[in-house]
Length: 226
Image 1 (cartoon, rainbow, N blue to C red):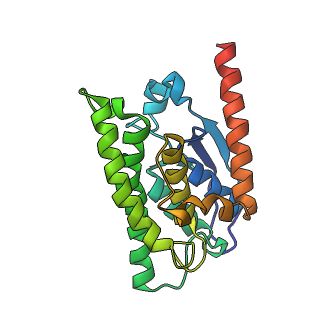
Image 2 (image 1 turned 180 degrees about the vertical axis):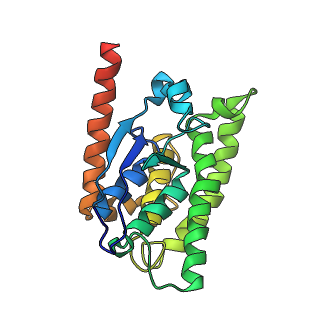
């Protein structure tokens, strides 16, 4: 099989846990209409620490993407790879300018390197300290106010990171949704709070949400039968 740019399309398998940031990669593959196998890793059952998975992802994280047997880890790398396979899918702007490339990298770095650790501190503070987890949570709230504020100002004029939606908005929405589930207040950040509503117009976003629900149900059945 080949892509719409006549590039060979490898055999793809995505390791995923519903609710994790790997949902961004699910969206990317769905929107690009690339065939892939979804392999569920049950983080609640600690499957990420099992030798079978650490052999794929040494840090025991999702997502991980198998591409013809080669492994790609880290969300930003997988997003960039899928975009390269299907550039005409419009996952990122394709104007070729250095400034656009830099802004894409800035967004990926903000989501993966800044917001993601903050979200982890809000949702699972005990995982990143041997001391008082409430101290981590309080600090994460303070950092979240500052960092989500930066993202809010970035998307306030158009509603998107760029002039139109891109994968960065899917990634931002994941961070917003997890933070909101912990009680983080998004009232000061209305443009971020409205991301999900705007993204719901995209068929691939709706398919991603369906896959999330189906994956959660499949893992629950797996746990009950264990």
